[in-house]
Image 1 (cartoon, rainbow, N blue to C red):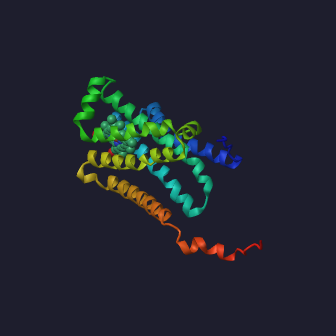
Image 2: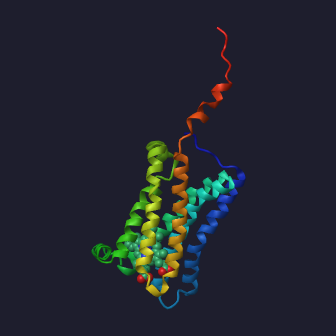
Image 3: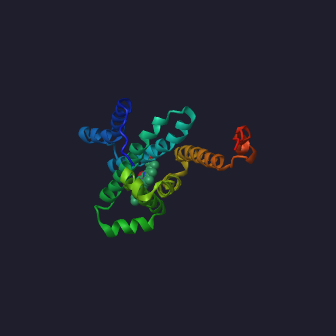
Length: 221
Ligand code: HEM
């Protein structure tokens, strides 16, 4: 498979998107610089990186429906970067958990992952993200083959469901509106994908497939 080079305009869009995706981590650096983490710095960092992981996950999932609705096929060229940024924020989120909560103590980390169900679910989502991030390159697509690669990358929906469960589980009843909003957005994107797969699976009716044949003239021998 030949490496595709981007049209200069898409390359520019990618640079802008890259910088936009860095803004949330820039916000953390700014807070560190100005000492503006609020009364609970650890909670601030954990929540910020958690919510941005979920935001980027949803934005990544928006690419296919947006492309189908607008016919702007170049949107697909942004998906890999968005997916990798999802992983980047998930890794920061995980790092803040193992670093701030457990000072990188492996036993403590393992105990907490088993003890608190919402942490187990988040951890499962993170583990499932790793192979997706690792295979987000042309070499992996070539090695795995398109079908296997697509099958693996469909895990993104399972990751979304785990992320929604994780978010519901850690939120107090009084503040359920946000997790609910994220779950509804995820359900809409999942619903679109299921409908799309059903539509593509509908076989072309026989009479339609046979139609062009009627117009072929028999060649004389
Ligand atoms: C795809 C992976 C993940 C996503 C999308 C995600 C998402 C989130 C979200 C949305 C929040 C709440 C933010 C808020 O309250 O505004 C959160 C908090 C949290 N997450 Fe995750 N998370 C993920 C993975 C993980 C992992 C791997 C761990 C640890 C093993 C983890 C541990 C936590 C903790 C400790 C909190 C803070 C809970 C609190 O405030 O008490 N998450 N996460």
